[in-house]
Image (cartoon, rainbow, N blue to C red; front, side):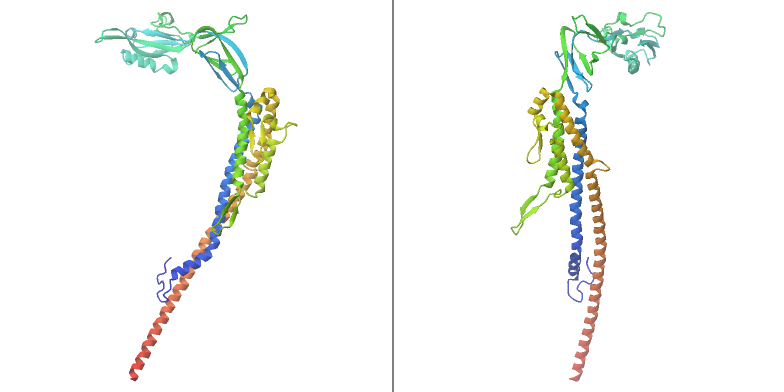
Length: 448
């Protein structure tokens, strides 16, 4: 801030003097701002850690659930039958032959034989259709307008004539499945023979059929309006694409890769949390400009709550389960506190005793989930409490910093007033001195 009479009488740089005095008093505010920055950084770090711990709790809950381990994969011995397994799929095997593919009715219709209003019937329902004109395009448009209800579409096809004078019919195509055949009557009287029906169709509507366990005494047939058969095996759908007399074997087996992924997911989430804590706790050593060694602790250094969380997670992952060491299923911790999964050991344990191995991993996940939940709970979590506490510190420091802004502003105004008053007083004294000097000089001149 510039003083209007800066150094007018004193010749001093009063603005610089005031800035210096205010800066000295502002050191307290600078310290508060530094504290606020550190506290805000800590809040952000705690929030990031809390998010990762919450993710760990979610992952652990999933891994601890026995239903998560009931994972399977389905395969087909032929690419003419594709399989899609859901989470409810269970292990099993079935053999089948594809005896027929699903098809939809296809009929040709002469639009010139249609009346102004004609009837289309399918699925036990009839629909009166009123084209805007007899033109094939308008008749097709009227049929297509009801396609969402009827499942029947129409398109114009050339059936004769010359290039200069072609004739057209309408090709009507229905949905696949025997129940989706259709009829078209010239008018609304459905008692007369239909212009188009399953009897005079180019292609008839058929269901897809497969023979289960062909050649055996227990063989039976399944049908579907489409080429997809649902729940042939529990939780497994089949889609057929080619008729073949060669048997196709569908196999549903336990998905070992997916089970290993569950164990790996638990370890990976634990590792993310522990790595985050380690990186925020690690001290750094630097040399300052004077050659002195400066050791700086991480944000989490010395924090007992973070230390307890680390110890609890490591213990939950490495303590024995019913007398069995987690190392027996491939989970170990090195001397730096890092937890890893040896997949070879895990696979071997699953092959030898899958039930005990899964129960061990599930127990570990349960313990880890409990630790993570205690820390990250939205209302009572230990990390949540620390975040709330630090946010309060940041708010309090912000209030103090704002008060210092007001205090420094008032102090500056006070100094400006004092120095302005001094300049005015010095100016007055200088004026008096100048007047006295002139008076004395005049007296001396009159005596000569």
